[in-house]
Image (cartoon, rainbow, N blue to C red; front, side):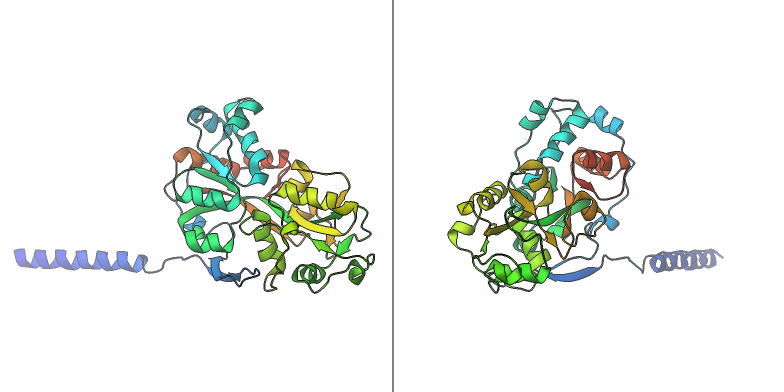
Length: 337
C-alpha cells in the first residue's frame, strides 16, 4: 500500500511539472529589423529593434505609477541622479530638475554637464551617469556598445532633422532626392534646383554628432555622403548655424541641425528653414509625422538602474511628464492638452 501511495504521488508531481513546462514553452521575443547607416566610408549594418521604444521595453517588469508628488518626496539636489545627454536636451534636463526639486534655474544649471550624444552613451556604459536624455546613437556606437540590448531606452519626445539656408536664398523647398544629390556631390549649383546660378556650399557635422547621425540614417540612407572640405565641417550645432549665416554674406550655404536646437536654443536672424518634399518643419508637422524626417529622443537608464532614475523615466511617460516636455518647447511622444 505504501509503495502504491508513493507511485501515485510521483505520477502527480510529474504531471504538474509537465504542465508548468508547457505553459513556459512560448516566449515572446522582440522583433528586429536591419538598418544600414551610410557615410563616406561604408559603415557596418546594424540591427536595431523594430519597436523604436527599445527592444527591452516590453520585457521589463511593470513598475508602479509614479506621480510628481512621489518624485518630490524622494528627490533633492543632493540625491538627484547624474544626468547626461545631447546638447539639445539640456533645457529639458534643467526644467526637469527645477520641476522635481523646486530649485532655481541657476542651481539646476550647476547640476548639468552634458557630454553630447554619443559620448554620453559611452559615459553610461562606464557607469558615470544614471540617466540620459539623448538623441539616437550613431551606428558605430550601437555596434560597439550593443546599445539597444544593454540599455533600457524609452522614447519620450520627438525632434526632426531640418535644413537651413540664408533667407536671401530664393529656394523655399527641396525634395529628398535633391538634398541627397547635393550632399553626395551630384548637384553643385543652386540653378540645378531652381535657384540662382551660384555654387552650393553644403555644411556638414562631424561623425558621431547627433545631427550627423540623423542625416546619415534618415536622409542619406544608402547614398554615400561626399567627403567635406575642412572649412565646411562645423564642430558644433552653433557653429553650423553661424557658418551658414556668415558664409561670404551670401545665400550659397546650406546646412542641417535638429529642429528644437535651431528653433529654440540658437535661432539666428537671416536664416530660414526649408520645406522638404513640400512640408515645412514645425511642432505641428513633426508631432503629426507629416514632416517626414522626425526622430524620437530618449530617456535611457542601465539595465540595473538607480531606482530614482527609473522613477523619473516612468513619470516622463505620464500625461504630466509629457506636458512638461511640451511646456519646455519639445514635441511630446503622445498627445497632451
